[in-house]
Each structure stands twice: as C-alpha cells, then as structure tokens.
Length: 62
Image (cartoon, rainbow, N blue to C red; front, side, top):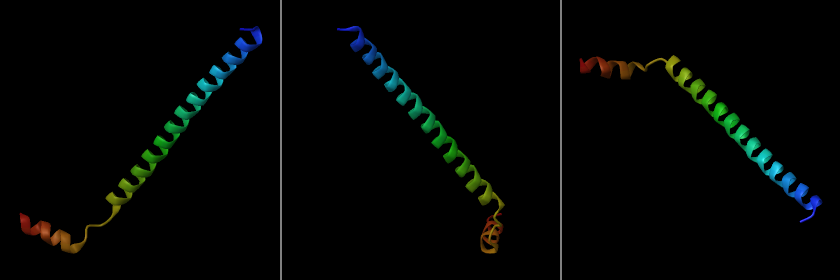
C-alpha cells in the first residue's frame, strides 16, 4: 500500500467519524426540540380550565 493510499484511508475514517459525530449532534438537537415541545404542551394542558361537567362528576365521587 502506498503512502497516498494510507492517507486516503485515514481521511475516509475521519469523514466517517465526523459523520457519526454530526449524526449524534443532530439526534441530540432533535431530542431537545421534542422535549421542549412536550413541555410546552404539558404546561398548556395544566393551564386549561377543568370543564364544569367534569368538576361536577368529580364532586359526586366524594
């Protein structure tokens, strides 16, 4: 194997490692985005008022 070929194989490995690193960053970014979206939905749900019919039903349980 020539020196040129060896250098080329290292560059290929470096590209593969960079791609893997980029994929990990992208996955972390997506996970963070999903987490923020879920927290927003959860917080919005907590702020909603309880319908009167539901409150009446809960009152009948006690």
